Length: 416
Image 1 (cartoon, one colour):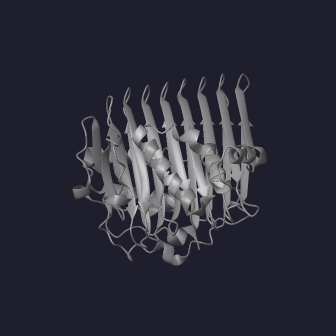
Image 2 (tube, helix red, strand yellow):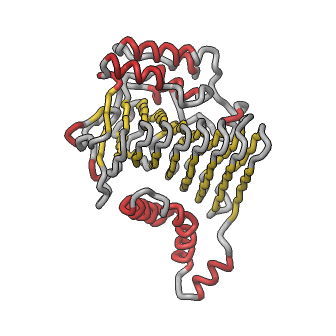
Image 3 (cartoon, helix red, strand yellow):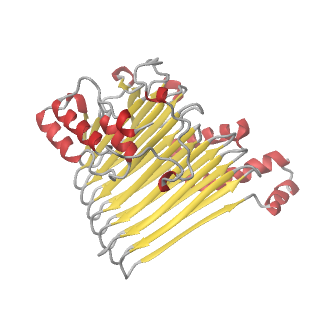
């Protein structure tokens, strides 16, 4: 396959969006399809993608199933998209302090603002983001003003086999505060190419939660990219279960002095599933702090990839940055490729990174068995404890409870 051949724009789009599609398509001219010789893809194969994966017309249900994304006691504003279509009947009214604009319906002023921001947060080297832009027929802009107390949850549900291009642009106004949850779910076999751009103005705060909980048949290549203004703060939480192919790129650009970020995540795989997380903390300005913590549990013959990078630019003095990745293999056939990276072009910084790959301690298993637990129960308890503390970082107690139930179901189905 070839990026340039796949970069086919929809038939009808507003003029400003056609300009963006054209620019995205031009960025893919001559770009080779990733293979094992491509550094960013050397441990992840794209063989699960076929020409049929990019079909935008077939296999769509479109009705949605609220039971798939229901979270009890989560007092959130839900915006529901099924197979890429916004379903107002399943969605809540947008709260005060939040503006929702569909890219295809933007007026002249909104279109000008969107065109000046879209595509500027995601790094230009992310070619699947360019592919997303070239094939984009719609997307949404969320604009936050002031302090929005109620979490906003975007549900991206897939039901069929249609290729889906999700695009989200979030603009945090100066001094604004919000919690945003992206919830990917669905039982379809769709290939989803999702791009989220989060632009934080000075002194704003955003907690962004991204849940990749699609059924095991779905293919997903996506990214969440944030740019932080001066003294902006960003919190992030990621949870991903495996599939035939799942790749998530996360970049946080500390573009303004005094910006801070706290990122955590977990991934769980079993059978012959695949998942790949590429995380990068870009430090472009001085006196910024970042912490990134990811943990993975890999069972059976599954294979995980984690690449974590800290990049300190010239002039980014007094930076403090840490990155930590721990992985637990629960079988002799499970694999993980983890690679921490430091790239520093400035003195007067404090940076640390680390990665571990291990199996459960025999002493811990023996201790729990000596206290009356069976072997299987002890095994599952230790697995769950490995990631449980990260769930405490979820922005809402109801969300943490939901995720614990989901993960318990994962373990019950043979995840350990």
